[in-house]
Amino acid sequence: MSASFVALGSVEAVRPVFLIVMGAFLALIAWRLARTSGLWTSRFLVAGALLLAFGYSVLMPLYHAGVIRYYFPGVNYQGDSSAVIAWHVVKLVVMNSGWLLFGLGVALHANLFPSPYARRSRAIRTVSPHESVA
Amino acid sequence: MNPLLEVILQNGLLLDAAGAIGIGLFGLAAVRLARQQQSWGGNMMAVGAISLLIARLYLVISPFMVNDDVLHSIGPVGVSLTIGVPPLLLTFGLASIVWGLWGHERWMRATNR
Image (cartoon, rainbow over all chains, first blue to last red; front, side, top):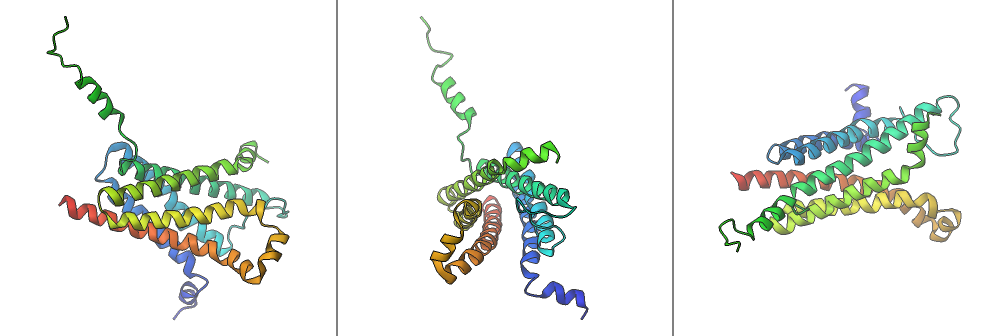
């Protein structure tokens, strides 16, 4: 058994591996769900799921592995502070906008917002074109 | 520092709010799916969204609220809870969201067939 496999199967590595699997699976399921739904619903779903998959299966394991260091305000990082800050900003944007887009997509999928088209068509139906105007 | 990065860093709370709104929408949609379409995945997704929301809110407000006095008053068990519970909530929240989404997708495929 090679050393790399032992490192991958250790308790320390369980959470990053779990996050990688979850991110990939989330993108897969969202894509399958998006195939059966409308245009903008599937756009929101797939965009959010891809952002979340990048965040969960690439960024978070990199943070856990120590490749990227966590950003704390007021800490001097001795030279590579710009990389730490840039990755922190990337993480903020990717995770939050990913959840926002994915939540919007699932909300549209669940018809959480009443569609304006239905209301407009109902308003038109109240006045029949064959009604006497006089 | 790059002014764009600075602006994003200073408005990090807004981005966190956007993420919380997204998770809240997700939870509402999950509850609606569970109630209207009797999809068991909806319950799972709602539980996951709630636990993610709790952990995220804690992580957002903890720099403002948790200081040495608070940590001293809640004792060692409380301190270890503040360290251990948010990652657990995040992990199992994500797991139940993905599980619920999978169940909902399978359920939709089974009813549409």
